[in-house]
Length: 470
View 1 (cartoon, rainbow, N blue to C red):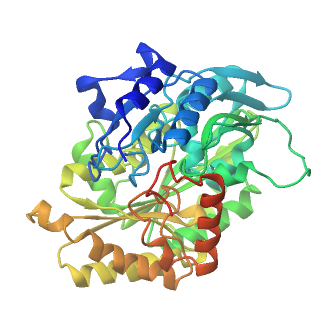
View 2: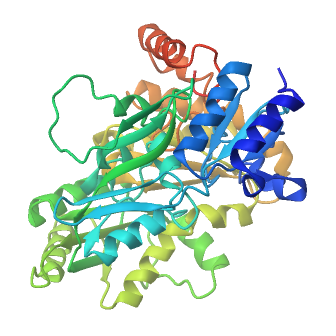
View 3: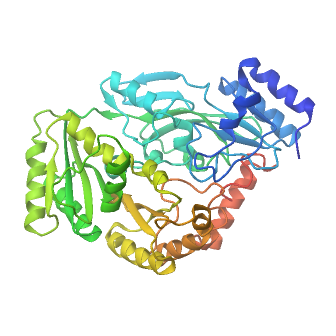
């Protein structure tokens, strides 16, 4: 049901003129970056405080108005986009961008949900600390969105997903009540851990307005290498060598296919192959330590030497400067964007047990190539934690629209193999609209019913991000 003019006027009065988005300025809030979803909205509002969010939800609960929370609008599954009917109100948290408090001795950072990930990282860095969540969209994505989707990124191997980096939350419930759980405690056994209900729930159970994040010692020593490997199975074995030799100092371990490297060097000015001879696969390895005298270069060199001896790699380059390290990372971080320059791209964000990564990539590649000759598999990502972005670029010369029309067919093939291997069809991007109807095939009926019960309990009128997740 579309909100009445009276309801919208009441909501607009809460946020004031600065909080109302109108005219052509509305468009960026309605489209997902790949334009898989382009919606309409009854209004786009930008509250500036938790109290304003609370007041808006009280009105929404009273009138049955649907609310779509939105952070930096970098999500890839349509969870932050309103439906096409135009009956929902988009609630953007971008004006809620205060750093509330930083406690260096307690290693905590309290902030608003609209603070960008890059700003949170910078605030920690100014205090000599590290907030380790790192994503390609970190300059735009916001902490609230990161937490509501349980974002992953490149440092999960060492520090965990977003939910592992949170000590406390502030959440506005569907009826407008504010739950203040902004505690910076590492031990608190006084009942249910309520914050975990909202982390990863994509705004369907409550709207995260603030958080207390864990900080860590800022690394004083970093070692990075780009290594050529014969296949993903060898990459996994090389990871175990790195773990054993370093004693657990591996921070990132990223898989890059040859075709992905060719895409980047073709389209990104200044990008170059770090190694003289081409290889079918590569890994980007990074280690970090709190001491500048940790000798990480020597440790990483020992890893590479052992990997070479075991036949797990064929060549490698160790970064000898910060620029070279940045160049290595650019090859990985621009991989998603350059695929758009190669035509249509069908995406998969999946995970399987790390030990099955090689089997999965091989089996899924065979399946999609048999279904569509000429399709170009671009499998890359966080192989160290079992998360691979199994993306498919259109055959050269193919019609883009006809290729993208096969999205569901390709999903069915790839996700079927994921399920056979005990994996997940959404490793870090969330469910949103894109995968909502498919998770029933992955989760048991008991799990689905528990999720629905939670939704009914916390949002009995179904006004929080309806049609998403469950």
